Image 1 (cartoon, each protein chain N blue to C red):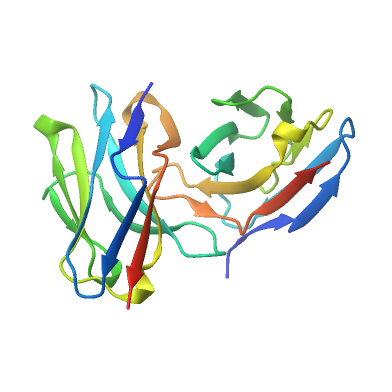
Image 2 (tube, rainbow over the protein chains, first blue to last red; image 1 turned 180 degrees about the horizontal axis):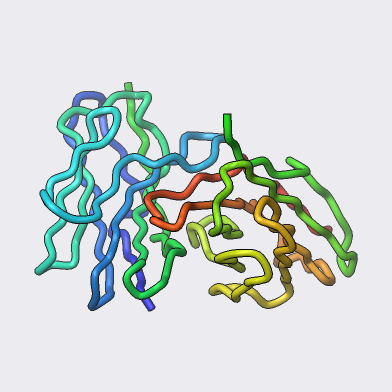
Length: 115
Length: 112
């Protein structure tokens, strides 16, 4: 079964600072990788996803993530954060090639952006 | 527009009572999932279904059950509610290509 670890529990940044949130997964086969965001009081929304092809994927709101297969990593980045990016971010993985459509989530990273 | 709805939004119950949380989706998705979200644990999978009459246990299935009698609904039942089941519950669905999950707005359950 796959598992996901997120390195940071809580990140605090000032506006305009750069962001990188770490995510590592463990699964030997082909995976789909996702980042979801949960704004305060809301449900999870998809930020970006990687299935195949270009390992650098771009998502909504200026976010991007890079899949590094050799490191089993899928880190999320944003060059300049805004106060509105304050939210909790979840990395997730599934393995549809193995008939596994359910997502396994990391424990989440809470991002607080200070104006 | 297609959507996924959960009810109730908030529920307070007593220890030992049976509770059922509803989840209804109009995406015509085969795959449906129940997660619970707890501080420090992220989202953990409770049960999931890949189609009518199909149900499977997830990571934290003890004390929960589901049934799938049609494509649209996957109700989650707590057989005998415990305080440890106080949590926020999210239902989600996805198509067979599993491109992404669509989440409901969640149910806040408090077991006193």
